[in-house]
Image (cartoon, rainbow, N blue to C red; front, side):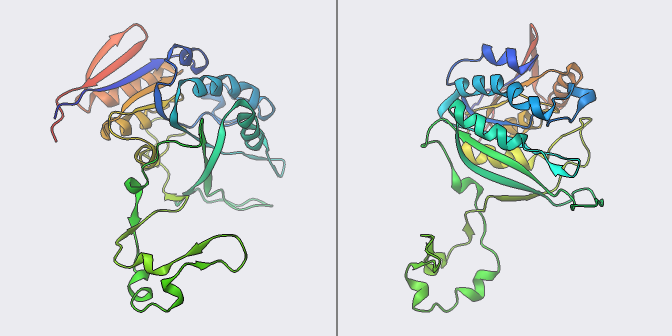
Length: 291
């Protein structure tokens, strides 16, 4: 089977460049924008009190370009200042809901190798948010693509089932949740939780905030299929684009720092992709994939 992948790198400001994309054309938006008061020397920095107003014009365009069946995943983290956590992420969530987004789920990225340190009133930050937003309650989700091994616990636990294990056992606290343990028999894989245990990107790819490839990979597998379109409006080091290419998804990245655009181009060129330059945009086409 022959496949043609289109990886488009757009040099410019997301607030303007997103307006050039077609309505309802994107299957997955996965991105990590500059956090409030972070990356000041790279991206100029946005104050926490200004963050929502800065982001809403961008998310308005994201809402327009995302397909009704698509998903928007936002990697973001509030900071602590003067002994107190900022509320700008919470304020952003509420503002996005008012804008028309459905806040469907929240995932947690547990950073297994977070930086050591000591603070007088808190411990190390070992996690970041991954907020899932959708345009509609029914959206594409391919849960089998991210199943995980069931684990050694099942060998002994499922060896001999009690009478209760073979029926739906409702939770005693009245939550409505329940389980039927017998459903786990003969399974070698199960659905994961909403906590992802991944190490950070140690060799930061010459970018101040690169995330590991496993992070976008997990969400690309969960919410897209081959030949779907993935968008990263803050492309940074291009990790999302590279993973999308590897998983045979089309991808669009927008990046405002020219050095990073050139870095992404160079990285993709090393992967034997043919490069075509058109105005300020760079389209990379990979042909003749054989299964």
